[in-house]
Length: 332
Image 1: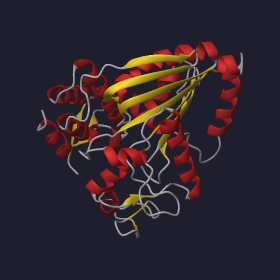
Image 2 (image 1 turned 135 degrees about the vertical axis):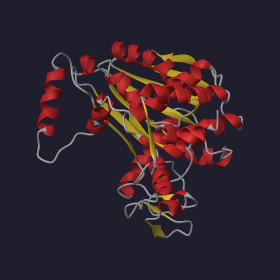
Image 3 (image 1 turned 90 degrees about the vertical axis):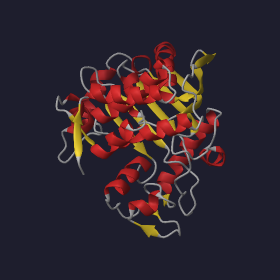
């Protein structure tokens, strides 16, 4: 694979220019470009520029509102609902996060329910933003059905990701962001593009047969839940939180209405914020740090997020697939 090197700023400008050229206004383009460039910076390639052609496709098809203006409704002191105005989720998230953080700091626990938006990115930015405010964050969302429930061979769930962040004042937070599927669809797409095989147990081909061929899983096949029935149960929980509780589309409903333009699908997002200062009281940070330090000191242990934070601190240029950059520039 041939690569070119770009800085984070250059990646942001490329993504923003591309989005502006295809129907986004300044606010929506900036928020989405920030999400894309931060994913590239942190080495999360499947959620960075790799997604940009899909963003463009959804703008060109008219599915997504590139001039969306999120609006919020204060349901209770601890519950906020955002209507994303059929725009991309990053702007709705940036709009709602300060409201959620203020509510959680006051009440101890608060929820942000995002409806009517299109999520196409990693989930860690949401929960990291809460951890930066010394809040515990949990987020989950749904999308197009690509995952077969345990025992089935037909897609019903999306990859149904869930992210969690726990603040560590003065240090990087403890963060994980993972699909409830055996592998994220974006990672399967990259494996298919680059000719890499998948681990056994990742997915089925169009005939329902197990396969390690990434192209057969990505194009017409289905992904399997991680851990069999356990991943399937977690995926069900995420559907009920991000669709049932939010009041938005379940994955199977999205599958019936989406235009399949290659871009994101409409769906809800559930974000929970908790204040350890309110709930645990003074001393929470030292107590939790003792635990995480003990865990991190064990032989063979690498805490989730450590590699991403190391990439973030690097000052080296970022290597990006050259063919991808060519295809993006052709969209401007």
